Amino acid sequence: MRTEEIEIEAAAQIVAFRRFNRFYTRVLGLLDEQLVRSGFSLAEARILFELAARTAADAPLIVARDIGEELGLDAGYLSRILRRLEDAGLIARRPMPADARNAILRLTRKGRNAFAELDRRSSIQASELIEPLVPGTRSSLIRSMQTIETALSPHVLRSPLVLRPHRAGDMGWVISRNGAVYAQEYGWDQSYEALVARICADFLDNFRPARERCWIAERDGERLGCIFCVQHPEREDTAKLRLLLVEPAARGLGLGRALVNECVSFARACGYKRMTLWTQSILKAAHHLYEQAGFRLTHEEPHHSFSHDLMSQTWEMEL
Image (cartoon, rainbow, N blue to C red; front, side, top):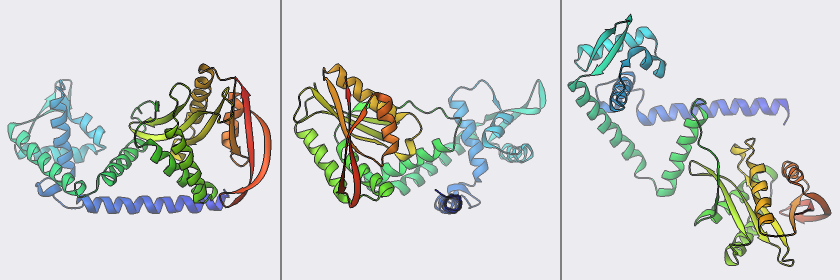
């Protein structure tokens, strides 16, 4: 991608990011003086939430400075909010013995009741927003929210990547994502998606658990990639690696290498003598993974498929 194209894409991403911020603040009413008509500003509500959460977690001391740092609030602004909450009888605070400039906080009974009502109103607002959505859209929305939270919170430890066997619903995802990713990145038409659908249907119809396997890579329930090991239709001693896919957002994590190595290890453990795969010359990133695993290019042939002139390749390795 040329420099000017990168700059144009970056500018478009900034515009999209700001548009989403404007939309989301409007949907949640974050510009209103009172959050969910509770009588509290957003900052006041967040402080009440932090106090309630830390009380529930039996924190030995709830320190004002810690809450200010967690929420990114200026010390003077935080002090003014705490004063208002104290004047309203919602919190009690006392100076820290070792640092009179800092304070130890706690919710009063009135504060706990106020937070319970605020929490109830916030739950109702969330319910009113997501309940009208169909289940698939609702799940997609929550996954997108989790993606945003993870991407913008680098200090949060991510769950490990998991390679698991296929289960109900996975083949639909394999077909859909192969079709979408290859259309977007290489301009392939729907005939490729049809090919993937036939491969998946054949895998399910003739599945041999002792000799074949599909792995789905996922993290926190989100599918990030896949790969198949199947028996060659004409050679019982030969396995085929098929349908390696890594989601664009998951590339650079070593996931492709992990999928290929898992597939090869399984084929070897099953007693296959060799392994083969069919790919295209333009898929350079995948070639690098195959070479690392021990595959070698054995045959090339031009063909016209998926609305493009391509060079098919056969790669093989002895197990």
